[in-house]
Amino acid sequence: MKNHWWWWLVAAALVLMVGVGLRHDASLYSVPVAQVTAVHNHKAQKEVDSYNNTDYQTEQTVTGRLLNTGRRGQTVRFSNTYTRSGALDSPLKVGNQVFLTHSGHSYQFRDNKRDVVLGVLLAITLLLICLLAAKHAVVIIVSIAANTALFFWGHSFGSAPWR
Image (cartoon, rainbow, N blue to C red; front, side, top):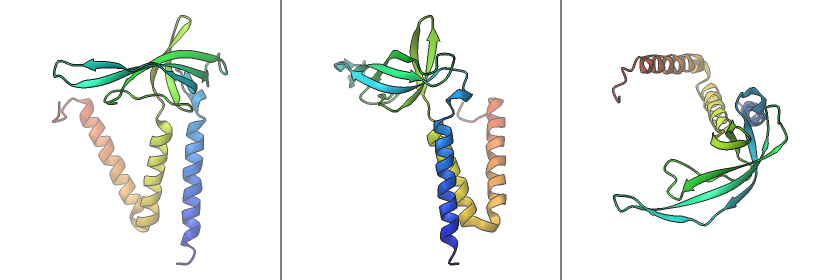
């Protein structure tokens, strides 16, 4: 009972390794990945929709350093537009890693790279199951995996009730 702190320390080290590994995995992607190095926000523009909802749209001029492709290390500029409500978009901040689309001589913002957050949360979840459910951890993890597989298998046939 006294040596349980050791397992928690090992779990924390594993979570840290997953986070660091996923933060530096840009070379595994075929699409351009960049790390944001500078952001300039332009003046917000007021917008009112047909339902009389007010929102503010801001355009950002973003500078980033490519982390993969043949142009690794080069600086690129692209733009991002977000709304204050953040319903479908979000502002970029220095340090964010993003996916880009390359066309001609320019790059366009595609999406945020979220694998670090998802990977760390998955690692924490699995480690907590293993640490707290000990003997039953394998059955729980197999059950979760089977249910997830069935969900996606059923979803691929379009038989989901929410469609």
